[in-house]
Length: 514
Image (cartoon, rainbow, N blue to C red; front, side):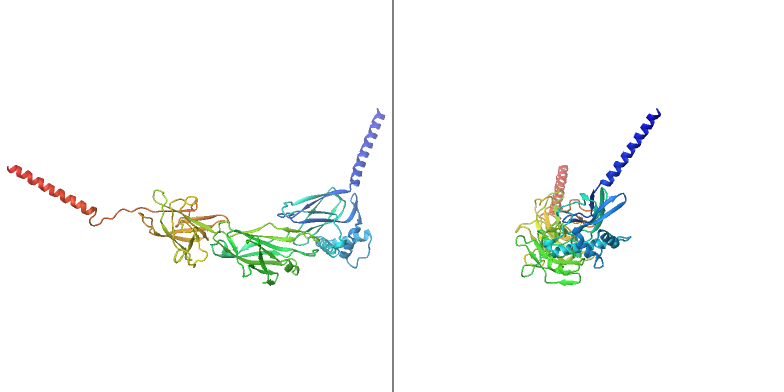
């Protein structure tokens, strides 16, 4: 029995030793891992290329690491380490890189990574026939929504990860020494922002709006040529303000320099598309310098609430190629609003033939009798539908609008388009036949609540009209008395009755005498 117990103990010990040896062998034998690449919160990898370079091969034994420099990248390492670096052995490269990147806050590490990337990109630019290739690379198109991706099967090593197609170079260094590793990218793709001048929060037809596009000079290291083009698109409610040559007048400021020789070229295929090419201007500008572009557009009669202006940026995104990326549109909405009126009698029957004038208001919100708004008919010789006149002093404008009997596009019979937000006054100048004219103008207030929403209130009512329609009623009046009218007839009737009564009394008295 004792012998059996001894044998069992020996077998158990042997099994444990075997298990430990297997585990140790697996850990020591692993040579590949997966690198997870993440971008900053709120950013994507659209239009970007992620390049990975293995600077050192690595062997792992427990907590010990062996390094062997990747000869493919020694020319670049030599440049980064400088003339003082002379020990061109594996250990020498390791010691030099460790010294260059050794810091508590990561500043030196970041500088080393950025310097390596810049010198590599510059080298490839200057030696197109001897370009140093990346260990791994992945490109993303302009519609990509990826915020992370995995690079599988990477040999253990010390890697540099960088993006191209970004505002600036912000590379990262990461060791892959286990099954998984993670790197967080720190930069993002170029972008632009478009805004309208403060007086264009809402607009009226004929108003000129100044638009401003802002961007930033990207890091163009490694590019032989760099494309930086702004493409601008108008909706039907806007027209570019052009010069005699048919180009859009553009002012460009890059850093402290101002350029007045830049034009916006309108497309021959679509007069609402414009391109501003700043490729040559940004070449000599400092990386990170602010770009500011201004131009003007005019609101036309086709303007609607969602009148938009959008701009995109086309830019180079891969050194050594002609590849470009395009940003998502930066949109500006400059709303203009309709004023719809439902003119009815007391039985809610629409009335034709009511004449109105529309007045702007003074700064304190009262009617300005000197500011009657001129309009044009949407359809010649047809009442009911009007648009704010682009030129308020033009001879072909009118200042009086007339309602129609049938509903226009819904539940109103007077439509005025192209108004900015504000306070207006509707004055009835002539009532329909058989109805009384309004005794006072109707106050109308239009307020913007968002780019696509607005409210309309009537008189001093704080509650907005649910249907955004101003209801105005006319009533009939009673006929006033006049000479020879109903009063005279009544008097005659009374007189006749009196005469009849006297006659009856006379006859009755005569009969009694007889």
